[in-house]
Image 1 (cartoon, one colour):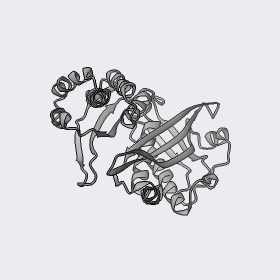
Image 2 (cartoon, one colour; image 1 turned 30 degrees about the horizontal axis):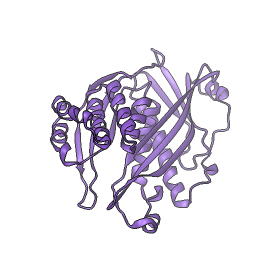
Image 3 (cartoon, helix red, strand yellow; image 1 turned 90 degrees about the vertical axis):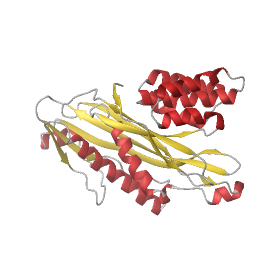
Length: 301
């Protein structure tokens, strides 16, 4: 991963009084790592994902999945067209999302396409994140799986993208109450559609210069407040200095939280290696979803 520059840390807001989780947004720009033909390039966009075989969704959820798939195709086309000398031939029927049954070889020949980009699979869900005495946290997630074929369909490369995003906290209503009000994808269309675009961006990241933005939840302990203020103002050197002493604290949870916050600092500065080290140290001291999420993102970008 080649990071061009950090584009700035943005505070995206405070939740309501009963929703105590705070977040920061970390946008970072990346350069392309692979290139199409230097002259004109023709890319054929097709659907090979059979939505009718998605048995784990009800009617309302299928509608959200359909919106996510359509957004993925539209985003892929839009982004590919930003590249120089690239032409996109879109064969996707967004009204039916019918599966293209023709062979890639025949399609490439028929449309004189240099590449064929085919969606293989799409998945979305809402997962439990964490819980305390007053709130319950969830994350929405989307996975997209494409294949890009070249040389008339003779060779191909898998292009996979996975992203997740924290949802606003819900009140902790107890075991049975939480089961009743558990959020689902049917009620989170906006989040799933947005994540579908982000996941597609990740899938195509080898070919596109792009900016990816992670919404990172942060710990809100009193002893972290000076460092948090420095993070919000973009003074990462000062935040680093304030957080490092807590790595030697005898309390494992304190060390874990400090290491996670340092992972955010280093990610914001574009130092992926150090961010990974801190996220792993956070997990080693006290296993937590926050550190697991940032570690998974950093290892796959």
